[in-house]
Each structure stands twice: as C-alpha cells, then as structure tokens.
Length: 313
Ligand SMILES: NC(=O)c1ccc[n+]([C@@H]2O[C@H](COP(=O)([O-])OP(=O)(O)OC[C@H]3O[C@@H](n4cnc5c(N)ncnc54)[C@H](OP(=O)(O)O)[C@@H]3O)[C@@H](O)[C@H]2O)c1
Image 1 (cartoon, helix red, strand yellow):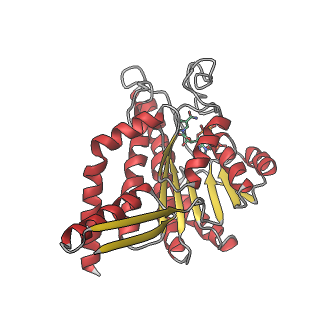
Image 2 (image 1 turned 120 degrees about the vertical axis):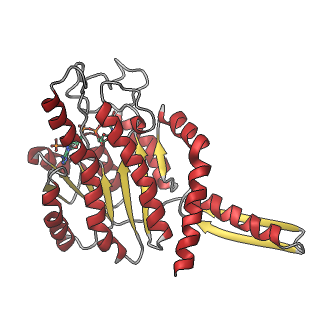
Image 3 (image 1 turned 135 degrees about the horizontal axis):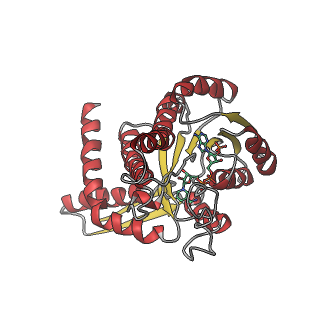
C-alpha cells in the first residue's frame, strides 16, 4: 500500500517537524504500508496580520519595523515616550498613528488597551519592541541606584511586554484570521556575554523563555495567535546611550555589528517565510547551538502538554 500525505504550511519549521514526526509515527504503526510520499508546500508570506502596534516605534529598530510593515501594506500604529520622535517617525514611515505611552508604567496599560482597541478594532498584531539597556555593576553602583535602574529596566523590558500581551489576548482571540505577537529579545538572552549589563541580559532571557511558553500555551490551547521572537545581535541604534562609548554597536567599534538596514533585510526574509525564532548575524550560531542543546527536550514537553490539552477537551 502507498500513502500520499500533502499539506500546506504558512507557519513554522517547528510545526512542520511535528507534522512530519506525527505522519511517520502513523506510518510506522501501520504494518501494511510499504511506501509513503509526504509533500509539503510552504507558503511564502506569513505576515498574515492587518494592523500592528509597535512599541518603541519612535526610533531605532521599531522605526525600521514600522517602515518595513508599511511597505508590505500593513496599517501600523506606534507608541513611545517622546512625542516629537513619534511624530517624525510616523511622518517618515507612513505609520497611521501614534500613542504616547511609557510601556514601563504598568498601571497605564489597561486604559491604553481599551483606547487603542476602541479606536482600531482591526488591531491584530502586537510588536513588543520597546526596551532599555542600563550598564550596572553590583559592586560599584550604590545599591539604591542599581535597584532603581534595574527595577525600571524590568518594568520596561519584562512587565510591559507581559501586561500588553495579556491585555490584548482577549481581543486577539476574537480575530477570525488569528493574530500575532512579536517579542524583540536579544542574543544576550541566550548568553549574557556583555558583563556590564547583568540585569538587561536577564530581562532578555526572560523574554526568550516567556516567548516560548506563551507560543506553546496559545498554540496548545487552540488559539490562532502566533508568537514570534526576534533576537537581534548588535545593531547600530541609540540603545547604548548610557554606555561609556554609546557608539560601540556601530561597525567602527564592533565589526560584528549590523546596520539597521542589514538587520532588517535579513529578518524580513525570515518573517515572511514564517520563522517563529528569528535572529541575524552572530545570533545565528547562538540560537542554533541553544536549539541543538535543548530544542528537542523542549519540543517533547510542548508535545506532551498538547496531548494533555487535547484530552481535556
Ligand atoms: N540595537 C541593538 O544592538 C539591540 C540588540 C539586541 C536587542 N535589541 C532590542 O531591540 C529593541 C529596540 O531597541 P533599539 O536598538 O531600537 O533601541 P533604541 O534606538 O534605543 O530605540 C528604543 C525605542 O524604544 C522606545 N522606548 C524605550 N523605553 C520605552 C518605554 N518605556 N515605553 C515606550 N517606548 C520606549 C524609545 O523611545 P522613547 O525613549 O522616546 O520612549 C525608542 O524609540 C529593544 O528591545 C532592545 O533591547 C537591540
């Protein structure tokens, strides 16, 4: 007996892998099957959302993401703390509108979500891009100073993305065609090799693991909300403004650094082909190494959870 299985994927390599191993198990369990053909058609554009909110869209990577998504025909809304930057970014990128919001001020998030979803009910994508980076040293910085800066960094890099996601998930669940959450982490969340940023690296490790668990729970729970993570390497933006040399993410000081244009060119391809874990430059090896060491272990746990969720239904 010959079996032919065919499927079209618009999603991730992970889904593709689980589908293949599911088919193989099925084939192995049926002794009568002698040969099998499995054909997979990967769709080319996974930017299935219509309207994206980009936090930190007033500059750097957020502004570049806004310009890119507008060029792909998406409606883009941006937010940030500095109105003048938001105004000029919206004008330069063609973003539809902007909101002044400090994503680290958690108490302001519920009212913001109520307002943006009332004004833009079509919103179906959240890009948690806003982030700050503080050089800190547990021995040299006075504890009160260290803690104030680290708490603010946690509010912006960790609590903001979590509260925005949880606040928007009920709205996203109403979207017939699904929704997307994109979290911008960092290669430093995979290995904290910049010793002057102990808290920043930890916030990005949090965002990496949070993205994995959030993706699995939303998927296994049967929602159509995808979670994508982008882990940038050094990209030439203003992020290092508090460092001794704020230009050290430029090519003149770091040959591994990417320009914003180089970075965007690379991640655009990966976003469009439906990758869920996206990086560039030196991030490729770090993410691949992590995946080789722990990826299968995690996938096994995620598959067991999926089975539990199916039984519960
Ligand atoms: N550039 C890199 O080398 C690099 C590497 C790895 C990861 N990343 C990550 O990429 C993301 C974007 O960073 P970037 O490089 O584009 O830095 P950036 O040039 O400093 O831009 C960050 C943007 O976020 C906004 N922002 C900061 N805190 C905010 C808050 N509390 N609420 C709302 N908006 C806020 C800033 O505007 P306002 O100050 O006006 O609010 C700014 O527009 C960050 O999450 C960063 O950690 C960057």
